[in-house]
Length: 447
Image (cartoon, rainbow, N blue to C red; front, side):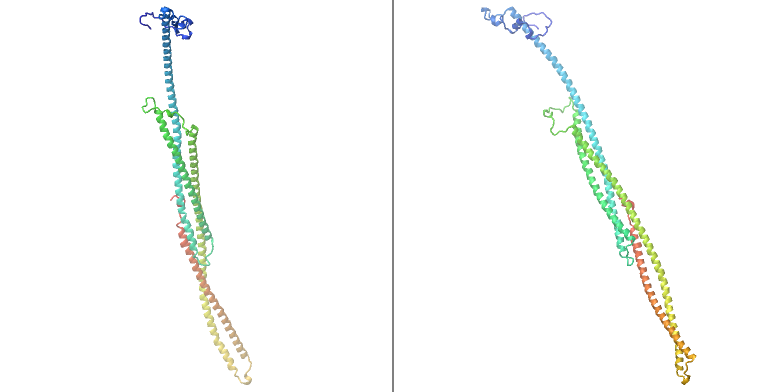
C-alpha cells in the first residue's frame, strides 16, 4: 500500500498485532497520547502546529497498522463468511435432503395405511354383498315358508269337514299341528335372523364409510405430501410463509395418527368377522330349517298314507259286511215268506181236526165216547196250535231280525259314505294339495 509523495519499499506484511499488545510508547504514539503527544507539543510556542518526524513515522505506522488490521479482519471475516456460507449451504442441503427423505418416509407410511384402508374397504364391500345375498335367501325362504303353512292350515280346515265318527284327532292331525307350529317357529327365527342381517349390513356400511373418510383424508394428505416432496430450490411456486413454522394445537402425534387408522381397521375387521359368522349362521339355519320342514312333511305324508290305508281297509270291510247283510236280508225275507206259508199251511189241518172234533161232539148218548180217536184229534189240535204258535213266534223273530238287518244296512251304507268322504278329503284334497309343497332349493332361498 502506498501514499502520495512517499516512496515505500515493498515489505512482507507484518503479522497482525492488536493495538492493546503494542509497546506502551508506540501505543501512546498510535493513540496520540503521552508526554510527547501533539497536545503537549502544541503548547510549545511557535512549533505548536508542527509534528516531529517521529510523530510522522508513528502516525504512518499507525495507519499501516490500522490498514493491516482492517484488512486482516476483513480477510478473516471474508474467510469466515465463506466458511459459514459453505457450511450453511451444506447444512441447508442436508436439511432439505433430510426433510425430503422424511416426507418420503411419511409418504410410505401414508401409502401403507391408505392401502390397508383400501383393502379393508374392498373387503367390507365384498362381505356386505355376500351378506346381502344371504339376506335375499332369508327373504326368499321366508316367502317360501308361507306355502307349507297355508298347506298345513288348509289340510286342518279340510279335515274339519269329516263326519262323525271319522272326525277324530288321529295321527295325521297331530302331525299337521306339529307342522303348522314348526313353520310358525321357523318364520319367527327367519324374521329375527333377517333383522340381524339388516343390522349387520348397516354396521358394515357404517364402518366402510368411516374407513372411506379415513382413506379420503389419507389420499388428500398423500397428494399434499407428494407435492411437498417435489418442491426444490428451482421450484417456481414457492414463497415465504413465516407463520407456517409452528405446530397446530389440534395436530396429532404419529402414534395417535397410526392408532386412529389402526382402530378403524380393527373395528372394521371385527364387523367383517361378525358378518362372516352371521353368514355361516344363516347357512346353518337355512339348512336346518329345510331339513326339519322336509322331515315333518314326510312324517305328515306318511301319516296321511297310513290313515288312508286304514280307512280304505275299514271301507272294504264295511262293504264286505254290507254285501253279507244284503244277502242275509234276502234270505230272511225268503224265510219270513216261508214261515207265513207254513203258518197258512197249518190252518187247513187245524180246520180238519177241529171240524172232526166238532162233528163228533154230536154223537148221541153213550156213543159220545172218549175213544182213542177223540184223544188223538184233541192231541192233533194241540200239536197244530203249538206249531202255529211256534211258527208265529219265529215269524216275529224273523221280522225283527229283518228290521235289524235293514238298520244295519243303512248304518253300513252311512259308514261307507263317511269313509268315502274321509278318503276323498285326505287323498283327493289334502294329499293333492300337499303335492304343491316347495322344493328344497326354494325352501333354502335359492329360488
